[in-house]
Length: 234
View 1 (cartoon, one colour):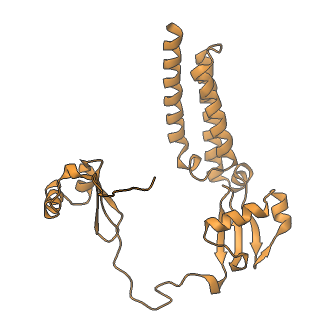
View 2 (cartoon, rainbow, N blue to C red; view 1 turned 30 degrees about the vertical axis):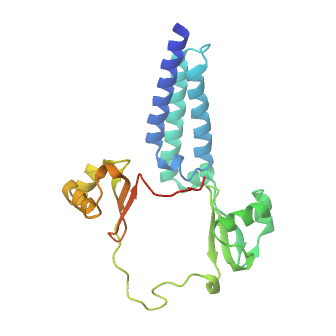
View 3 (cartoon, rainbow, N blue to C red; view 1 turned 30 degrees about the horizontal axis):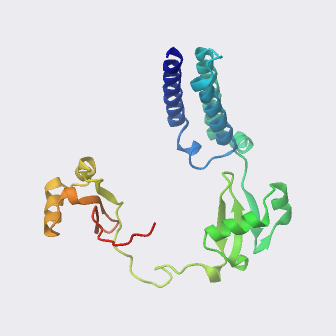
């Protein structure tokens, strides 16, 4: 029984330590992961796993190891922010794979980036014809940035000399899983009374709503628990 209790406490401690270190290291570690972030994430995870389950190692030694590695990773990140050369060393540099519509085979070979990977990344950007691309760069976090040739670019309102659209605002979630988001309402000058009145106009109540949001142009969207769909798609 004692062994089970020890594993429970060690696991909770590992989770808390990982959460704290991840928060301090920042969102970069979980979003645009570079070489440094990749190494940090794997190593911290491995140390935390030993803390949780490896009862042959003293838990305090593992905690010290985790904190030391966290300190190293944090220091490396700080230096990378201040020193561009160091940042290029630990994070890598972008690689141009298409220039002036021409595929740069040597660059792709150096980073072991295949044509299949290039085609897949382009399809993810809704580009199915290679001839549409003028410039493509593989960023240091592994994602492809693409500039289309001018004749294939999307037309903007400015191109058509149209008046600017209505100023858009950030979406505001009003109800989630039947619960009114009081803080969201207060931060945007809205009230629960106003929301309930809107629902009454639709012959609904808060308990009927699964999700509600005010969109970018102040339009209201409601999703109800009862969708009245006879045969929903799996």
